Image (cartoon, rainbow, N blue to C red):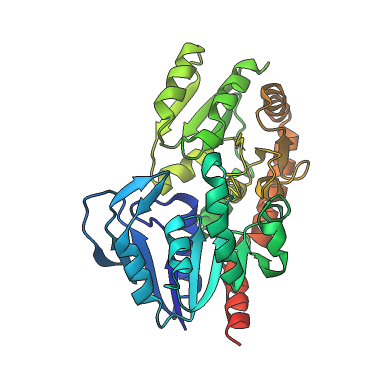
Amino acid sequence: MKIVQLFKIYWPDNGGGIATVMESIATAMKGEKQEIIVCQAKRGRKSTVEKYQGIPIYRCSQLFDFASTPFSIRFLQAAHRRTKDSDITIYHFPYPMIDLAVLFGLVKGKLVVWWHCDFDKYKLLMPIYNVFVRHTLNKADRILVSAQGNIDHSNILCDYKEKCTVIPYCVDESYLESGKKYLENQKNGKQHDIVHILFMGRMVWYKGCDVLLRAFKQMKHKNCTLTMLGEGPLKEEWKQKAQEMDLTNVVFTGMVSEEEKKRYIEGCDFLVLPSISKAEAFALVQIEAMAYGKPVINTDLPSGVPYISIHGKTGLTVEPKNVRALADAMDKLVEDEALRKEYGKNARQMVEQEYTQEKMTERHRKVFEELLK
């Protein structure tokens, strides 16, 4: 079986949660012939072919970037050449260049569209782009989504329910293993007086970090710290906002390594995910924190987010953009250590049951085998 994955960017150039899913699929299908086709992260770089974790990565030169979309003739050419003998071709949505490739008949093999999120940011472009997206979905042999909420709340996917299959993302095995060791060591560990709250993610518009800062300011409990872990275009703006609000117990870490990230998770009491748009379709950071037995406060988005950490079971869910509700939820977890432990225990169990690499591998193989019958 030959599997080709298509997207705009991949490790080590970043790529965020989508690149993590691509890597999980590559790991799941180890032993099969695989290739990944993406663009160079920056204009001016020539097309290259290299191996990452044993898989050929075709990085195509780009002409320019518009609306977070690298435009690349080389990408179209590579997609055509490399999928000619492909059995399964996976389009990690959204990337309009791939919709063009599908429109021109350049993509071969059984077409699997991995629907990571709706095209929510550029509303003025939606009417035009929807035409291309629907053409792609009409051509697709299967559509994969990370949670049922991403089907139920999508204006587009509701018309393609019969093609959709839910495959939740998985947590990296290293998080499961180190999370297990951490929890075993914590059984007799000392409790601390200060409660540590953690945010993890890219500092971009839909993450809602400005809402989080205002909510943190309004909390009645002041024996807390807030660590903002991640990099992104809005980091300096939010850092300045924290200074203006005199939030001296807020720390911005910038980009950290995976090992450092794990230490921050260990050191926190709960995770907060204050996202404000369904552009946040799943949020891998939820299951990463849950692997360490950490409760999660998330928002009731029309996406997969509230389906991952469940309100009243593994954490709390609040209305998006509601500063007061978020502050109250944080206060509730700060003052109730027993509740944090209960939610944390449930969170770890849920990860072990639903969000492992083994489960993700099994689900992908089932889909691919069905398509190739």
